[in-house]
Image 1: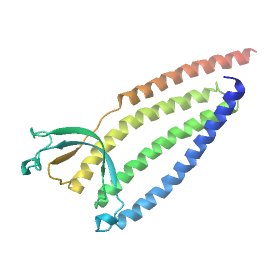
Image 2: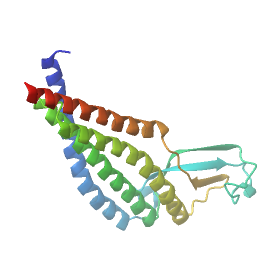
Image 3: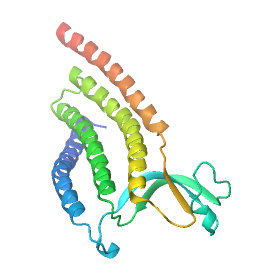
Image 4: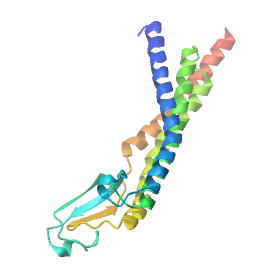
Amino acid sequence: MSPTTQHKLARLVKRFLDLIWFLIIFSMFAWPIAATVIGLSIPDDPQQRHTDIEMFAGFKVFPDEPSGLAAAPNSAPEYVLQGNGMVRLNNTSSRLAWYLSTAITEVMGFIFLFGLAQMRHVFASVLKGESFARENAGRIRKIGYVFLGWHIIYPLLQFFGGQIMLNDIAFNVQGVVLYSSFQFNVVGLFAGFAIIVLAGVLREAADIHQEQALTV
């Protein structure tokens, strides 16, 4: 790839990151206000609600019989289907569950925003011709920490927050047991550690580049 093409590509990526940055900043201020208004005015009619909640949960499906409804997740042997993943609870009437779900989204938004800020600084440095700036190594290391934090904090928030939300919602569907669950993304954790290692390599390269510049 020629230097001109690389510069154009870096500029394009930088503009895209800037666009995402401003959109997220706007959302971080607008979403809590909108969520608060929606939460304070949850109607009694389920058809008029707009309070869908997404969470990572486990579920078990039992035969269509009353005994399956009250069975505990860890003691019911007669389920016909079991799994876990992202589930959506449509039009909940629970304000606590709605606000807690909103808070989890907001926390993860701040973590993502921090990582995005580091990426913007890296590409801004590249556009200035400072690809081997020592500061970039620190920024890339912080991006690695964001990967680690995201794939550790988010599952924990989903698990403990999910317990509170499900208890408050009092999910009650015959033949279905829904319970809080979590799953660490091993690939995401590995990517975080790999980025941190690469940041160390980049720091060494930046030191060598700086020494050569001073020698010249």
